[in-house]
Amino acid sequence: MPMPRRYQSLTPILLGPLLMSLSACDGADAVVSSEAEVRPVEIVAVADGLNARALPGGVLASTTTELAFQVPGQMQASKLRAGQLVAAGEVLASLDPTDYQLSVREARALVQRLVTERDRKQILRDDNILAGAAWEQLAADIELAQVALDVAERRLEQTRLRAPFAGRISQRLVDSYASVAGGQPVLLLQDTATLDVVIHLPSSMAGNLNLGQYVGVTATGPGRGTGAVALVYREHATAADPSTGTFRVVFRGDAADAPDWLPGMPVEVTLPPVAGGPRASSVPVTALQADAGGGHFLWRVMDDEGRIEKLPVRVAQLQGDTVTLEHALPEGTRVVAAGARLLRADQRVRPLVH
Image (cartoon, rainbow, N blue to C red; front, side, top):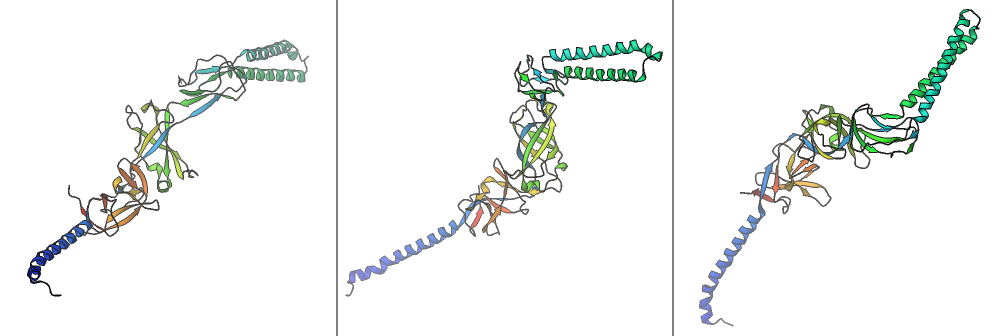
């Protein structure tokens, strides 16, 4: 059916602007879509460097000794308390010495009697009246009696428990007036001259470290009153802990530098860089992404056009707002430091202008 004349005259006039409008809208959408593909992100260049790391650690008592009487007896009253400082050679505890004093008196009396008998028979010996065998037996009896006296005196001395070194009483294991057996621990004594600090190295670090090369190892504690304490390498385990897979390393320091540090306190140990040692890279924590398999990756900027790709990485340490990797990235590697959550592979990015 033919279109009425009035509509035929209006159609070119109405459709022309409409088509132009639609064409303009399609062009704008294309521009917006293109711009949306190039995301503004923060990009940083990773610097390769020697691996200096701060690791969590803990304070150990460098020497903790169980003190015990070598003889049995009944403990006497003691005013010692846990945490008390004691000097080397100081008497820490005592047993009732009565029975041991009697043994000393008995042994001493026997020696005196035999010596007196020897002096009385000396004249007979000089006149060749006393047989040589009898004289030799008397000399042997005196020697045995003297040994018995020495043993009795030593056992009497062992009723007093002395500190083998200057330190701090860690714990009292037996109360006053309790009966103890010989060799039964009654006190724990800690050495206060030195302190030990332990860290646990992951296998990725332990396999490459020559711990004896470290000079300038320091530890800082949780309090503000003590600064960095210098440490020296002492020992390390050659087998990994079966439950954690880490290697135990112990450093030693001067306890006078940290008088308030007690066993069990957490500290942070800084291992300085070592020439020829392992290298690693650090990136902002916002750059680290997690994949579905539980691993981690970074978005690496591949070229000047801003195309990105996933770069798998292994994390060695998370400290504050920085992540230390187990390996070094090539010098100048560019990674997305912020705005990485919404990206996908082969997407283009551009530096964010602040």
